[in-house]
Every structure is written in structure tokens, then in C-alpha cells.
Image 1 (cartoon, rainbow, N blue to C red):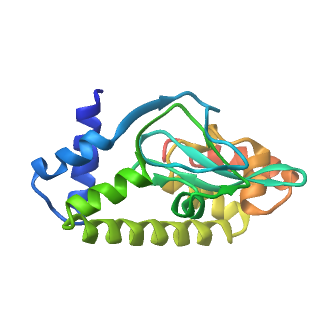
Image 2 (spheres, one colour):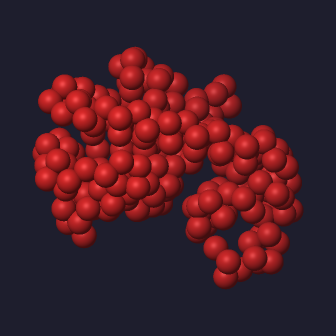
Length: 200
């Protein structure tokens, strides 16, 4: 698809929050960059500020935290999510996170400066921006609730939330995400996926 078609996808989504005439989005369109990244492509490196927010059109992105024993999966973003390290983005400060494409991914990218300029030019978008921020927080809490479950229950909820995600996550990623042992993941993962094959 072309940028205009992905933009229409974004508009249709955001119209469920607050409806604006399509021409109102023309200024937004000018500020957005369409990007396609292959699986394992890095969107944001460790010790760098996150300078972009990314509206996910297709695919999955992982937010990893650098720890003493390596990178640990902390958050997953899928279609209609905004993928970014929010604190780093808002403060323009470096952080110990990495954003990496978990699958081939297509997204629309937006800088903080572009966001501020747009809101100054089109104050009507302030309400939409606030509601999108509220949705981001709500989805973060929902994902945290999934992470807090035992692996067997949490993994099923994750597969329901992000169809097909199981094929893109390594056992180590799942163990880090659910704060459990790799042996637990190895013992249960494939039986869960096989038992529910066709549902996801």
C-alpha cells in the first residue's frame, strides 16, 4: 500500500476517538514519514533519545530494556499502537531501551517537533492528542495485567491480543516478558499453541 492508504487507516482509527474532516489531516500527512522495517530492524538504539513516535500499521515492535545480562523484552506494540519510549521521546533524553521490529513492520513516523508544530497550528487536535495518550496508557495497563499472569494464562491472553505474535517471539523473550524461566516457556509454549491452533 501507499502512504495515502496507510494514512486513511490511521484516520479511520482516530475517527473512532474523535471525528475530523479528512482534509483536516492534510497537515498531519505532510509531517508523517512512511517506513517499512524488516524483522529485527532497530528503530531506536540504547543510550540514544527516542526522537520519533510510530503509528503501527502492520506488524509488531518490541521495547527492550538493557539489563546487566542483556536486552529484556518489556513491551509489545501491534497495529494501531504508538511504538516509542514515551519518557525518552517527551524529554528528548537518552535511555537504556531498544526498539526493535519483531516482524516485518510498516509504520507512520512522527517527530515531537512536528507534533508540537501541528498542535500550535491546529489546536482542535489537542483533544485527540489527549485521548490518544489516554488510550496508550490504557493499553499499557492492559498489557501489564497480561504480564502479571502466570505464563500459561498470560501467553493465551497475549496470543488473543496480538494474533500470530507467538511465531516472532523467542523463548528467552517470553521468559523475560512473563518473568518466568525458559524451561517453563519450553514446557508450555508449543502445547498452548497446538491446543489453540486456528484461533490465532
